[in-house]
Length: 241
Figure 1 (cartoon, rainbow, N blue to C red):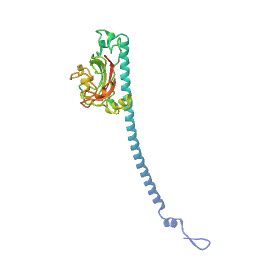
Figure 2 (spheres, rainbow, N blue to C red):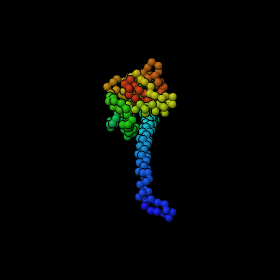
Figure 3 (cartoon, rainbow, N blue to C red):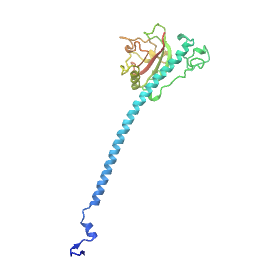
Figure 4 (tube, one colour):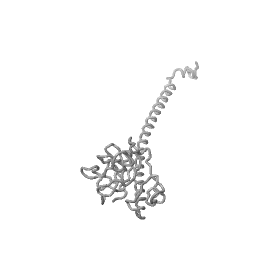
């Protein structure tokens, strides 16, 4: 013990430390708790942000694919239009794929001396469906008549078959803002929009309007529809007869 100049007792350093509350220990506990809470909050926010980003990305991808499908259809129509402009008749268009060297090459849509069309494919992420008769993909041909076209002759129909429902709906919104979903058909897309040589069904002409196969398809040159099997497809009447 130490006596100061006024005769009062002074505590040593050890006595002062022993007499204090355990401030350091308590502060350390508070710091650890704060760190733990901050870590938990950061983890929660991170998971939330990741989820939001994934959802946004999915919507962005769907929009991109919808735009790509529409653009591909327009490119193919441009190829056919160019062939018709240079002298090929609608009835002469040859859709053989892969193309052979026989016949009139200038009439072959996929031949380099004809339309030179590189047959497109659907991105796997854009496909939604379980059917394999036929497989998902792009199909084009002249095999059915669309009832609102000028003649009863077969028209050229292009279809992207078994695309995702969300992409289908976005396509329709881009074509016509008043269409927010895929109109329902009472028959299958393969029967109506794909050559019977590609599937086991039988081709059926596309009748439109009230009481027919596709009510909403009347006077619609392009539309994405859902068929009676629950598959979705985007069709375009490429060349009318």
